[in-house]
Image (cartoon, rainbow, N blue to C red; front, top):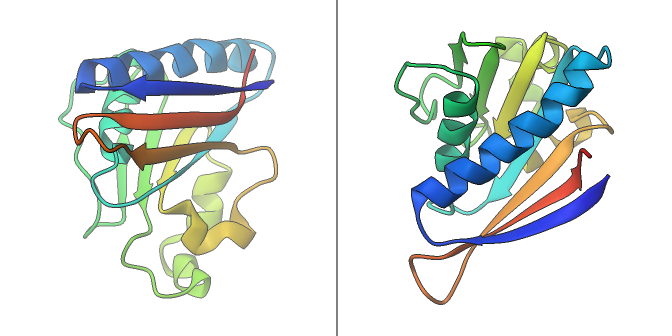
Length: 150
């Protein structure tokens, strides 16, 4: 596993990066792993939901993917299940117990957690951490995937 750093200047580039990650994760699934947690970090508007849209495209999910800020969790069915969790509205990690966060972390499929730092003590050690940063050019995002699967 290695770190991968990409500068994205449009949604299609972010979607392609997410597709590349899904392709790498397919190898893990084929080796017997059944769940993967992606911990997404970054400010509002930095590209986290756009990245999840790319995951959905790569998983052949045809539903519109939107941020679950108010619902907290959106579930999608494709080649693999995708669970999109947004912890933005949580005030403490303890609030995550109310909607079964720990059970989602063990769900079969891909679990993408926006604002993962709000429950960092619950995120598994083997999670893939993805950091989104806005750049001086407002169109660009720096995306760093820590421990990108081979």
